[in-house]
Image 1: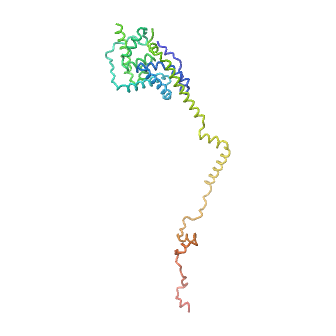
Image 2: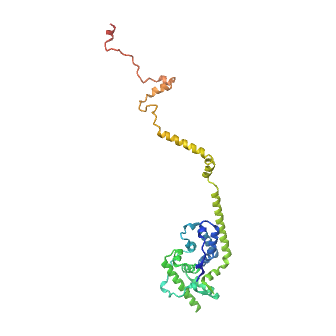
Image 3: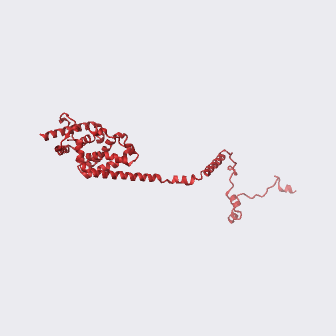
Length: 183
Length: 134
């Protein structure tokens, strides 16, 4: 399973007190997964860096609004997610999203446990990028930080049922694509 | 063999120096912001300066003054009310009379007609004057 479950205690209280070292530790912990999440959604390095920086600044500014310190990670990702949505809105008009639940095959192994061989890496990433942005978003949050469905619902400000269906669809679509490409 | 997480993170590993620089910039701005706040806290406000320089050194004097004012206020409240020097209910004299008393040498006053009529004294008795002469 993932190493995220045994992560050390984050210095949230110290960050609340304005200690820059605490913020440095928090940003160091989250900068890479946050960047990967953003860049895989916007597909532009500079835009992703800008969004990560804006996320850090907003986190410092609005930490008082975070009620539960244990939710710091999902809270940080929710800020980044909102920035990504704003970026999408600037780039293109809102498109209706269609969840094709009825077409899904049955669930099998958990994709987090999948082991990707070196020669399959590019292929796997291209498969992920073939998913819609909404599905990719849910899947990335699941892969990168092992967020629960509830947390993903909070981050993406979506109903839990929608998150479940998107996750289900995304995992199965990925499996399908992998099977098809291997054949 | 890699997990999906490892694959995703390793794919963008080259961005690490830029992210480190970005983090350093954000935290250094945070330090500057914090030191500005400390300076703002360290610099006493005007009220505090007045308190420290004006009130605090002469606190005994200010306490004495305050006590004196308290005594004055108490005496003022508790003392019986003094009679007014002028009777407010008394009829006000005519304006001409006031003017005459205030400006006796004024030419304007000289032209003023007195409001009262000069009366010649009348007979003391109702009997006719002839009868009295006789």
